Amino acid sequence: MELTAEEKKVLEGENGEGAALAMKILVGIGEAFDASHLVPITRAHVALSNQEADLWFAEKLSNAGAKCVISPTVNPGFCLDFFTSRNMVGNEDAQLMQRTFNAYQSLGSRMNFSCTPYLFDNVPRQGEIISFSESSATPFVNSVWGARTNREAAQNALCAAIVGKVPRYGLLLAANRKATARVIVKADLKNDFAYQQLGWAVPKRIGYRIPVFEGVPSDITMEGLMNLGAQLNTAGAVPMYHIVGVTPEAQTLEAALQGQAPEISVEITQQDLDDQIEKFSDNPGPIDFVMFGCPHHTIRQVQEVAEMIEGRTLKTELWILTSTYTLEMTKRMGLFDVIINAGGNIVANSCPDQPCWRHLEGRKGATDSPKCAYYPKRRGINFVVRDLKTCIEAALKGSIE
Amino acid sequence: MKIKEFNCHKIAEGVASGKALVSSDDICFYMIEPKTGIVIEKGHDL
Image (cartoon, rainbow over all chains, first blue to last red; front, side, top):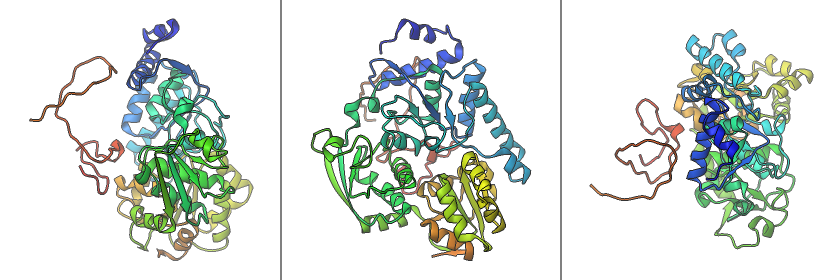
């Protein structure tokens, strides 16, 4: 990979040891992907995970004096005030979160702790070259906003934020953004949950190809788009998709395919969608809790929950995870009180895959997100996955069909 | 022991060697127990 004189100086340590390490990693990635050179970025999002390896890397860079040239937004860990004030985390877990906070703050991050930065605080325009990690964020910014990012790991997005550049390869190049798999949907995409099923169904059928969807209604919601990308990129490694007539680079099928024939063409039926539920869901029955917000619930989703539980009493725990912005909105709109009065909880800055859920270990809950069911399995937390309404009804009666 | 040669890219300095573990399924390192190396993903071939 060719470096400019200025980039070579960064690599040699002129801007400090931290910047040199970040540059070294970016150059390594560039070499691995046959990139010709580095290009500047205008935005970054780091999928901070608040796990030991994440903290080790962030502290290593911070201790070496690294500062972000492009201030990145960051993923949620858990809300330290909320969970410590309720004695839900031990000292060790609280210290992990505090150290993660300190490391990312000192690196110069925007401490938004949100997995949906593409809706509020880090929104690119079409064609912007950016570096976004986080499985729901990468497909959203590529597909919905038409920005250009590769499927970054948290660590290389952080390096990109420190250096202000990324190696030029993959989805930064127009030719690599073309759809190579045609996906014809012959199923009823009746609600946001159907896009969770669709996102889980497709990767096994198309492998690492970029899909173009036909048969998706043009009134698909933002939440449907979030769900589709999050599941495509969790069940598989699909950092970009096209929807004919909806996404910016797919105003026509021909445009999405860039005038070429697709490598494969698949049909997704209602049966295919229905079959997914068994793949990502635990068996139905009595449940102890319901968890929403993977990705973080939007204000519309919280409104839907609040309407269903207003004036009623929940039989199980209810956890709604959301952004700081949406939490503030729920307070202004009276929704916060509705949820609390029913016995539920709504909390910002937090993720289902964190050590703040130790009281749920070995227990069974319900969620509307396959991704929410997938990751916390490693913590011994089990989920039945159903649409939002079915989950709320289950929270009201204590069991799920 | 079966010997195979691969063309590699230069990424970082250093020399390492070890046995190869070959999987027919994709690997998500997140779904591996860090302490034991055991794959915890349901249905994974490793």
